[in-house]
Image 1: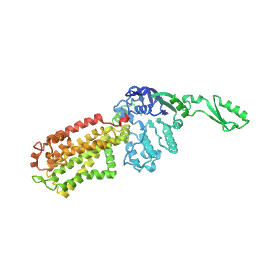
Image 2: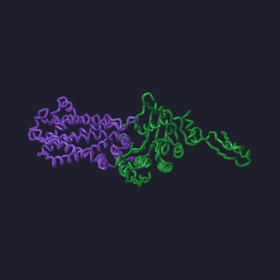
Image 3: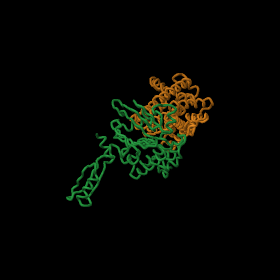
Image 4: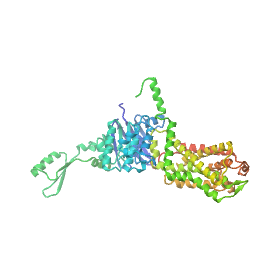
Length: 283
Length: 284
């Protein structure tokens, strides 16, 4: 199957006088991890919810796994079996246990994964018999993910999946996502954590004011790979000095000669994804 | 995955209409079981919901000890209102409050994102309501019989009337509850929106007072809504035939009871299908 997982042309969404999404074009290949970045209110969630079939668009073409998510018909339910969704925020199921909720959701799908196995993969085995309202924030989020993947989706949407995670839980979560991608699942995630996008994503897209202003690999986004490097060091008097250069090696060689060996406090940095991103959205 | 032979194609098509392991019916039953389980596990809710009508009859039975006339005890009259009010509470009030809360918590949105057929959610609610209604009514009748000497219906015909009036009444209430759930914008505001409606209906429909002792305009107003007709239908079951002429219309008028409740079912069903909101306002 060579068709793209997601194909979007000229997507437009208007709320009253506000244009929330303004002509977005986007293609996500099968098996890819794609991260959508953007400030709050930039149109990220609107875009994703149109792709998920929650919202109607006002213009443009959308194909998700070859299906138009806005068309409500018998095929939509069949399409739903192929798409996993982890919404923003956590849902709760009152008095049910983790095992009961995951087991129940498995019944919605034609070829679900084994609930116990999925619970183990999100690290909730010890909580399988606990009521969902006793879970911590991070554990609830992992339950959300379990419900998103129980149907063995071809495409998984994750809307800010690790908000509220501690660093260790976030790293465990990344491993889970990489495993899913490794088994061929296409993943579209939105996140506020640039580190997360950089670690996970094959490509990132930056959306601001309803427009997709850049799409590239994390390394190349905003010409990051060819951006000037910053060389910093400490002078003999103890003050910090720095310079930006396209040829940092030459600068360092020069410095080495000047200090006749070790350069005090030497660092050579390229802009981080966060630097590039902040630069882009403030432009 | 796609088989090119005719048989394979038929199989793929078959799956299209039913893309789950379980049949839709079975899934509906499972959803109902899950709803009932959730209900039974919230102890306070179980206590209050099941005991409420029984407590009401305790209060009324202790206050009004006399006869209403024709050898009919007040308890015998008021038990009909308590049954109807109980049905309205579990059908209308409970759903009109519970559904907005589930919508707020994102439960509905999440279900919408799965291949679960939408009607399964409603089937689950209906089964839960039916389960609670039967249990609650049984407790009420037991308490009223043991403590206040309630006379239970003595003919098969009356039991049959009891069954269809209750079934039709609870259906109307349940559908109204689901339809009404779209009115409250948040789960928190739902009780404030729903409780006055339920309370006023109880007062004007002959639950707390003998219906015919109410002002005429109030009786007319009550006649628009299902609760009055549920009470009237139930009175035909629990009160003697001779009491019929005391009804405002001169008889129990069961065909009218069926008609009004049926129309409410239909109207509420249309409202459910056209106005039900799976997502909150801020979700667009």
